Amino acid sequence: MPIPSSSVDSPVRVPQADRTRAMRARLLEATVDVLVERGFAGTSTTLVSERAGVSRGAQLHHFPTKNDLVVAAVEHLTERRGAELAQAVAALPAGGKRTRAVVTMLGDHFASPVFAAALELWVAARTDETLLAAVAPLEQRVGREAHRMTAAALGADESWPGVRELVQATLDLVRGLGLASTISDDSARRRRILHQWADVLDREMTRSR
Image (cartoon, rainbow, N blue to C red; front, top):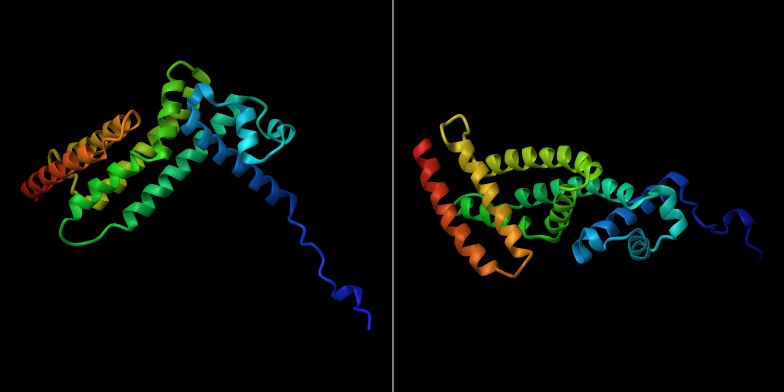
């Protein structure tokens, strides 16, 4: 018996807006990956479109120049860094050794490929006014949010003298260690330094309570 045409499965059509969003997301993720692997100077729109599996014509339609692509990737990267940091904070254990867990988590976050991509953008923005205009305000936003989450994760009362500076010093420390990790694998040294810093934080913040 013939199957009625109304019951035959037909391909599900994805709305154009959804296809566009998915294509842009692939391009931006590919941009971050290429930044990590090749650096800013080695990143090109051709490499990104190949990595994303997107035609050159489609890529140029959405992002006509390298700077258009990278500026869009800056905002995408900012959102991704914030989401990854929030997830890492949410997974932290409670109770004893909490401070050590917090600084270890921060050290891992700032030694990740996402941070390496951000570093490439910072360096490039130093001599590129268009890129700097995009990077600077977003980086300030990331910095404020990272500070807020770190203070909350540590249970730091910043109304006490010196506590806000301790939180900021923690972030400055892990950023510096993250920069060092782009040159060589110094995870063992980083772990030792962060364990010592966790002891300092515990001691100093206990005095402030």
